[in-house]
Image (tube, rainbow, N blue to C red):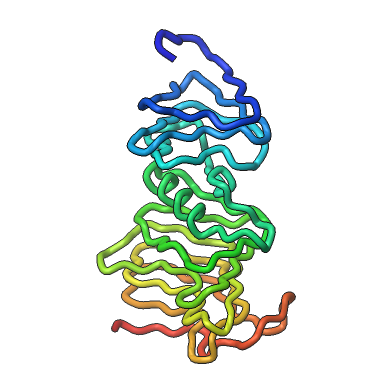
Length: 239
């Protein structure tokens, strides 16, 4: 992109492009992804995208390197699908969810989760200041392992988060549905839990100051019907 001063569109065809040197896509460039086009920076390499993107909602990034949208003003939202998340109720999405969270949080760009059923055995820890996670339609996060279904906990203060419009489907080994700890001055709304362990809470909240919790629901007869049901709906303490 050296010397590019006018708007340019870069069409990426099917296949994986390995990036072996730090690269910046300028703000006057648009990356046009076709289905199956993937950019893969090698370990220790950063691909910085300042321009816009277009193309189908499918995987766009892979590799051990870093995808950075820092200072990007042309991409209003990021989608976990860009990192390989699939809402097919089959694929385990834990690692890919983590990659999408890291990129969105570092760039302060909203992360949007579209309708689908997204399986994962281990929840990423979503507790990052300024991170915004918004579900579209019926976005189901399906916890298939043990431990917390949606982990949003920190030992230090986290602030200015937005989490809304998500449904968590737990299982008998889910210790709590949504677990929030040290999340302050944030907005948490329109979350639902379907099923969790019999000693668990659908929503377990600790050390939250000036955070708005709104429309939190534990449902036992909404399709798909999941058993067992958690012992508590909302459990709040300061331990």
